[in-house]
Amino acid sequence: MQSIIIDEQFKFLLPALDEETYRLLEENILEHGCIHPLILWQGILIDGYNRYKICTEHNIPFSTIEMEFESREEVVIWIIETQIGRRNLTDMQLSYFRGVHYNNDKKIHGDISRTALNNAFRQSDGMQTEPTARRLGDHYKVSSRTIERNAKLAETLTAIGEFSPNAKMKILTEEVPVNRTKLQALSGAPLDEIKELARQIENGEYDRYELREKARAEADRIAEAMLPELRQLNTIIRDFAGSFDLMLKKMETDDASELKPVVRSFINQLEELYGNL
Image 1 (cartoon, rainbow, N blue to C red):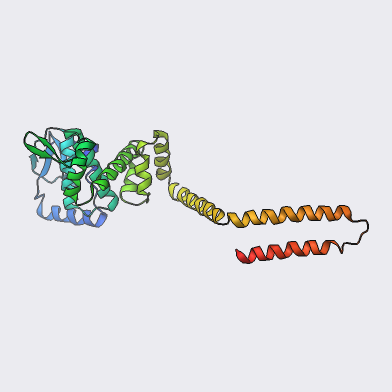
Image 2: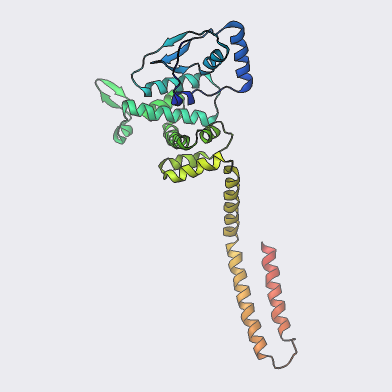
């Protein structure tokens, strides 16, 4: 059987099938053989990972097609476009793939300056060259802003994957939901912060951490909303303490009758404040 190279970066862009779909594919190959050839680049598998796995496990022959690309970046873009056109991907996977496409496209072609972006096009060798984000936005039918945000998200997920491929996969499959805005913001964060997020997801701590953060944010929101009432309460308590202390000092007998109006006034103010909450 032909020796094939498995590249981990390329393999990651070939999402594993769910159990039922994989079982159906396996049954089909066992019955009919591997009809569709595997696609290679310089001996590296770039399409057909599940078919390859089934064929090697059951010693089933397969054919291959060798494709030509000038760089790894071109291979990555080809894999992404093939997978997006073929698979039912999660929203997070789609965003990640678009971002990876953008980042690899820029490595190949560079990008156009902001001045050119404002002008929409730049003339180059008699051809109009469109800014990368806008061109890919048209290609994927999203806005150029979405492509740029996806690029930041992809940078963060790539960094997370370097610390924990499993954490990265959990985010992409949405097994662990992570806020997109947070992922985008982390693209320029210190690596220790990204590593901590990867650790939390890897160890199953992230959901609990998020709940604590949400609870803390909700408590802060409630406290901020109640700030005027809390300030009023502070004033009532302060005034009562001063009046009560003064009355105690003036008392020459054990008769506490003079304190009753002060205490009653305090209670009335508290009841009124409570009724407004």
